[in-house]
Length: 397
Image (cartoon, rainbow, N blue to C red; front, side, top):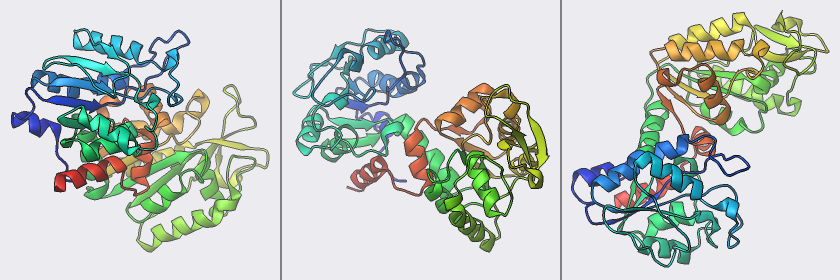
């Protein structure tokens, strides 16, 4: 993927004295008092800001936060807590600027945070006039927010069209590199884990990956639908019987290429969806009419672990069971630990996947952890993200 990289501009000495506008993803969770409860995204934004400051730029940073109403700013929409946290991490004051679209006063070596960009009328619909105003604020636009890369908004796409220079920040560039390594030029065999409650939400991903991967591991409610497609009974488990034909088509497409969708050979069942429900391991052929399948069984988990250990590349989206309940977490833990031990390059994304990675403490053993939920899923669907498209177009001149 050929895009201009901010790090290259810095190396070439093209940043000193320039006005740099960074679109970061600082959309962090907060409690009722407005305190940040998890600051991963703020910490992830620091390398780009630091790089710009050290290069002598006048730095402006903006982000969205929550789902504000355009043109109707409310106190809870404010990036104030983020400005405070940024200041702590950077070791300097980070002033917060409101009503910034018409102009920003910032000097080389300084950084300011521009208030929630989604409050600006026209942001979500990528209003051209607003995008041009943002572009006029800077000499260099840096997109460093992979979590918004699938949205064509004024602060992510329009500004990249009209800014004198548009480039990818280090976080976005790392995502691009990891995605290319995993999907565009993977070391084989390429295995994908796609799990979740519903086939319908990930059907296009399953269809797209069925053309590319050597093995497609399904889990959760998705696996139940594939078990139905394979002629197995699933009791009262979560599934989508109306999508059985599509599941069969994915299985057939994989088989035609000499690849496969492994169907569970054993499962962990309960009579109720509850943390304290007694768990019973059963053969996949022995599921009773009143059973709920809440995890893959140990034999299935061991078979999948064996395959993951011999993979060249692993793409992981979703836990394979109800891992929040300890009685039904064994399958996800086995898969997670196999990925951690595997010599394969692994890329993982999605909120539940990140929660599983954190639960089992394997952050350092996963090749790349994607910061974007929706954007990561759209990449798996085979879509070209708007942010990548516009930056490639600008790099091509």
